[in-house]
Image 1: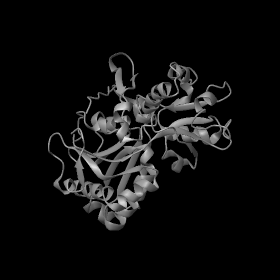
Image 2 (image 1 turned 90 degrees about the vertical axis):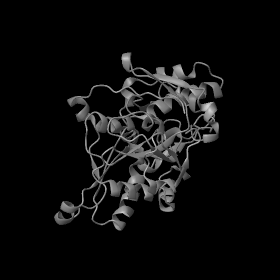
Image 3 (image 1 turned 120 degrees about the horizontal axis):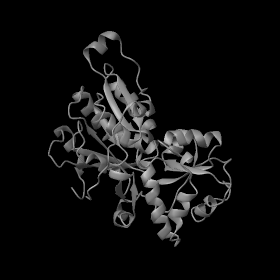
Image 4 (image 1 turned 60 degrees about the horizontal axis):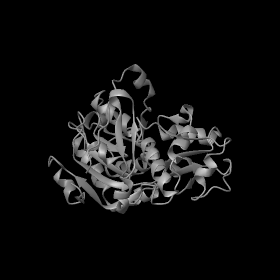
Length: 330
């Protein structure tokens, strides 16, 4: 696996104000139960909102005394909440498995890649040229002056840097050498938002015609999704070498880093000192079960059966080992 570094900026009150508020995904337990059992806290990529809500409901049925709290945000923000802000958490679920391979204070380095996704264009039937756009002409549609499109911030959300990688791959695929630069020029800073959730709202309000995001976003916002060719959409694990031919730089100054293309893979791990370790393991077992695979597919994800384990320090809980197989490059 290629080394992958993410710069971590110093965070202050401004960052705290920008974090996505917590979403409680299970009924609040009675005071007596709450005093006996700590809640299960999950920090996750916001594109997993529906998936986690489904599993939280199933988990609550099996474990009625455990409250489930989920906070969704961009994966980079989620990691910073643990590593920089030291917020209590049990499970960290990232939209890029590589983020969990790097040393992150307070987060274990083992991880389980459980599902994939793809990048494409989200839009509405009211979007400009919605009746004409397709997998062959989408980039020409976006070049039209009246068409407005956006994507998420690549320094905060993997969907943002996946988008830039897709643009690089598209330039090669459509034989348009300057396509990535032209798309960047047509996407003003105002159309780049911290997380995909904000883009859904802009699309629904008509402020944007299109945005680059995950196939699963269509389920969250009841949107249309234009699937791009698999050679560029980052969905196909067999095309890992081809995806790796694209790379982009994000961030500025000392925090500038290079992102190499790869198949999109969501991965989960535990924090180093989870307040409710037993519940965290049970939730992971649910994610890796047939019920978890069904929930992933229903959320628009590509379920990995079995999940792929990365365990460089040999610290993965034994309960999970039989439910996974080693990742190819691990």
